[in-house]
Image 1: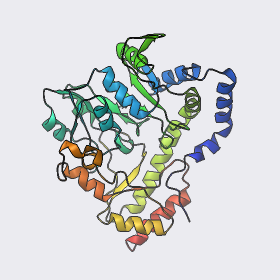
Image 2 (image 1 turned 180 degrees about the vertical axis):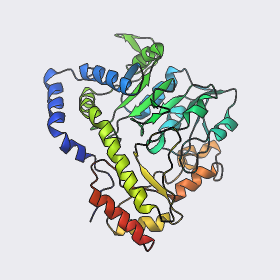
Image 3 (image 1 turned 90 degrees about the vertical axis):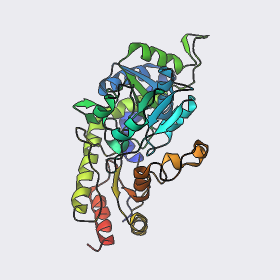
Image 4 (image 1 turned 45 degrees about the vertical axis):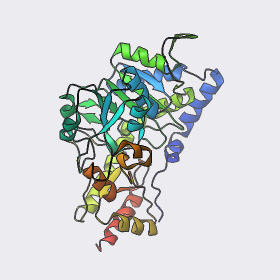
Length: 363
């Protein structure tokens, strides 16, 4: 048996009729940029996240950059984030000219460790970007106590609840990605910033279109970063199915957990007060590389998220970080192994993965 690690096309086949009708509707109307589908999706997604306003942008990465710009963060400022995630949060801090400040992570939940954050706050700290990694929330309640603006990176976590409320609506700004492999994935790039602050929403709408409020009058140094009308139409079709897809992911994770319970592995640990939507199901093993090779030989491909923490990436070689600076993130990078996970993954393929993992340990 060969088990796909991801299969973004599977959802299209389920929703084919609705998606094609939505795309045809956009093409027929001829309103391709910031049209009615973008406006409707912005409202629907913001409400889903417990926020008042949604601002569609080109990508989740742009969402983070524009969020920092909206808060007037730039040279001389510091922003704290995690070294164990995709590069987008650190990249956005760099792009606005601020200083990236990393704080280490929890060894089993992989999100920011509040005690490590506290050690790195200075008078120049202007914001924290907590990443809700792999589909569960960062410890927002503890981070809120620092009294700094939170820019929530929810790229992997739309549909997560923390303390009974959706993520993205806790911080002053929440940033979403609709990259095709995300739990709510477009058929291309796309992103969204949500906020309940009307002034920030207005500023973000200007920033995404060259700093314009009135056409051809540029009040801010802006960007060309707009959510595409076609992608918004597709996302409107998919949004009502998101909770069911997240529930199926949780079922698959429970099946994995049951199958691995007696093995010498560290299984995903859920943040207290948070749901988990398992954008990624990742276990930890001291024999990660051997296990990965065994699975590959038996039809189970895996991808490592993330093989090197951000402070050890070549693009930051001039920043002075060294191996050992963030030991938990480094340890997790050496031991983590994500397994196949997407809602359309059938039980027989989940069970095949379980059998292959068990066989590696002689079970």
